Each structure stands twice: as C-alpha cells, then as structure tokens.
Amino acid sequence: MLRNTDKLSFTGLTWSPDSTKLAYTDNGFIHILDLVSGTDRRLVEGSWPAWSSLGTSTVIVYTSGEFVGEGSQTDLRAIDPDGTNDRPILLGSGDDPSDLTNASEASAEPGTSRIAFVSSPNGYTGEAADWDEQIYVVDLIDSNPIRTTVPFLISHSPSNDHWPPAWSTLSATSDEACIVWTTDTDTDTSGPFTGGLVLAPVDASGGTGGGSIELTNPGVAYDWLPDWHPDAICPSSSTN
Image 1 (tube, rainbow, N blue to C red):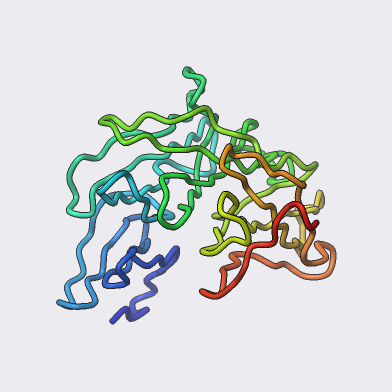
Image 2: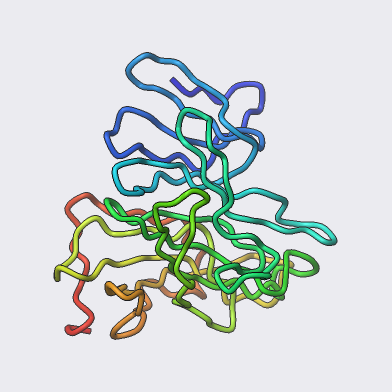
C-alpha cells in the first residue's frame, strides 16, 4: 500500500495493462508497486510514467530532465519494467525531425504503440504563460533504440496545453480514439489559475479529424488531470 508519510509526494499513478502493478513518481524517482507480491521497487530517476505497448512487449515511457530553470531540458525515454534497457524516444534537442524541444508528460493509447505528449518550444524558463506548451501524438516503432514516426501536432492554442493527455479506451469507430487535456488561458501568473478541458478525436494517421471540442469553461476553475471511465465512448469526429 502507498502511504504518504514523511512528506513523500506520490504523483502520476498509472496502472499496468494487466492491472497488477502501479507505476508512480515519488520525490523525483519512478517506482513500480507490485500489487500481487506487495513489493515496491525504485526504477529510474524521472517523472510521469506511462505503460505503453511495443509489439508483444510493454515499456514504461517517462519524462527525464528538469522542467524549470535556465537551460532546462526534458526528454522522453523508455525503460523495461524490470529496470533494464533504458533508452531515448524523443530528445529535447530537436536535432532530428522526430525530436521536439522539451518533450514531456507522455500518456499511452491503450493496446497500441501511440503516445500523446507535451512539447514546449520556448522552454521552461521565465513565466509559465510564455512556455507555449503543445500536444503531439507519435507512434513508437518496435526497435532498439526505439524509433518513432514524425510527431503530429494536435493542439496549438494561444495558451499552455499540458499535463499528460488522457486516452479513451473505447471509440465509436474502429480507427479513432480520443484524448482529453488541460488548456490554460491565463497570462497573469499571479493567480488564481484557471484552465479547461479539451477533447480531440485522433484517427489512425494521427490527425484530429473534426478538430477539438471544449468540454469545460477554462475561465471558471482549474480543471486538470482528467481520466476516462472504462465504459466511455469516444465520439466520432463525423458527428461533431
């Protein structure tokens, strides 16, 4: 059992595909809690773990690096659940077409090799309102090191679109899923902060089809870290 003692900070809890394990972040390190044996193992330094499928294997995609400070940079990496084979997915340098500046906060589409993630081309320096975080989708290719298709831009609003996007587990059509994320509209970082939830159907090619849908009013409260009910149905973009 996870116990928040001694000012420990548990974040980013996520279930393994077989629901026997939890991955989470505690004080800058990713842990795996085995719910069958009760063992808790520290895996790697990082944050925001996500279980992702690669062919017949499962990996944990996570964020490596710092979010704030001069010269800060975040990358996406993957590691096997046993702690071996730690390798890069998307490097924040942008030296390769499949790399994006400050890639972070990934989430995985259930049963596929696609992930959604956040990228901040302006970097995590200065005021949060200037970070210009965007949501991308990319398909991981089962290889070592992991290669990817070129990331597909999902959102680019005049705000920060961030926190790990949540994938639906069911879709109304055979080739679409949905993701939901938080968008900030505040330019005044003195607070109080407000943000709303946005939904976008994502087709097999990574496109958004009918575009995005505003689910909650971003100017009323701060809505963040959404999740889907297991029986939730992703609306088809053709019905939007």
